[in-house]
Image (tube, rainbow, N blue to C red; front, side, top):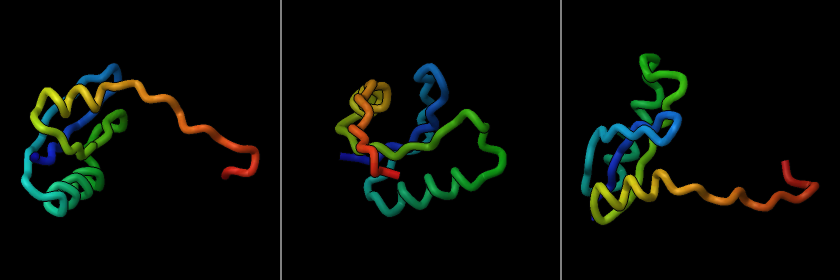
Length: 74
């Protein structure tokens, strides 16, 4: 299964940037993109491991429950 790199904007707008076969390459590309000053402020760069593009986009748009927090968590 490949790794997909996406730009994620508000309201679940997704923009596929790349697809790679190995995590180190995907991670390095995503980190370089995050450091780019031209990246819009409302954009996040995500790496996702999925069977295909549809699976990646489904995972990226899922609403997940927040993790439980305890009083002593900081």
